[in-house]
Image 1 (cartoon, helix red, strand yellow):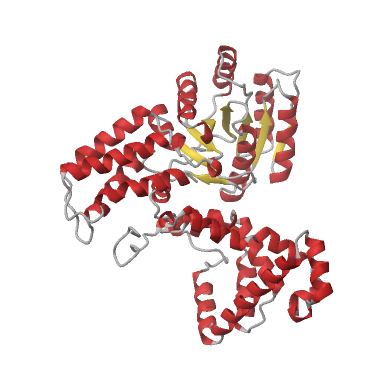
Image 2 (tube, rainbow, N blue to C red; image 1 turned 90 degrees about the vertical axis):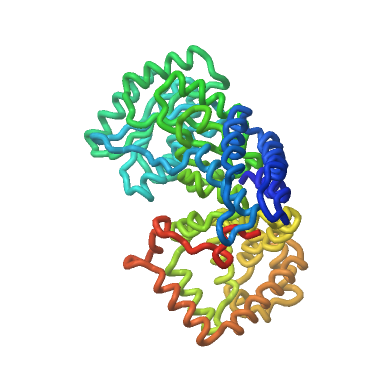
Length: 471
């Protein structure tokens, strides 16, 4: 996420490295580099100007705090001002209404509006424990109605049927009545999208908004369109009483222009980020955490929350106990790889780990290439249960059979087996008391019901011996 911007910002701070104090001259050099980084990231010009004017004004009178060098003090200032420009703090959905709380979702075609509704439905059901009903008021695209019906079934929420012969206002009125009778907490409304903003679309959605009177009106916008995304959102914000933005496709956005522009230009908070194609790939937008990632400091809190939500802790504890006894096998290795995939894969994990912004992209690519988790899972799946627990059996013809079955080559099977042997050796080194202590700590971290505690409300200690910055 936003890799190019992270790399360029990191380079821009080098202008201050090795300096004993902040001066007008070296501050101007650093700001010039930051401006270039933001321009290349396709951040809107008006946002860049406001942001850099504030940074320059505060940097000239900046006192370097104890334990910080000038470069770190400047980065801390940039972190603070970036956080403010993109929203300051996390803004949650306001669902405090007589049930059902109606949430209307608007956006252009191709931005990921219908998929975002399914993701939001899943989020509300699983994270907020809400009973959710979804309905499509897009009477221009029968495929959109069918798509939402399929996605609703996939995420396990109810779908209210509609068809292209009905009026959008009538569809939503009936869906709301049904939601009231069946005691739904939330009604999510998918509206018609267009390929571009036009007066007919705006007139229709304004009428629908006034009749439905939703408690939340969200606009879905494609992050990869850069500052154009912010200006499109502004047009909608001027026509509708928007309450928030869902920024989609951020996993494929290396620049980050939309994320840094949309809040300032529209005045509306980004409430969610779409971070992948899967139905669980939706994250609440935390400005401070996003800025932390941008500056190469990682996002430990989001990583901890994700582990708490997506890792099967009973299975993880069972595997840890097997490790302690030296009984770790290929089936356990496969389970660990699948859990990593559930969390978005190694790249998504690296994105949230502190200090990764300082590692060259070529090195990151090597680290990700070394894992090849999907290929490894396919190889393990092609083995018999006995082969997974007795790897010494895998020789000659067995290797060839496993390679054919997984669509790989014998060299890939050899590579997996070597990696597994290395892991086993590490397990033996950590065996006995060390591993048992680690398991006990894992058990102690789990709450009364077996889940990790909510560490988003806890203040973590600074990294690196009192210095928050890993460089």
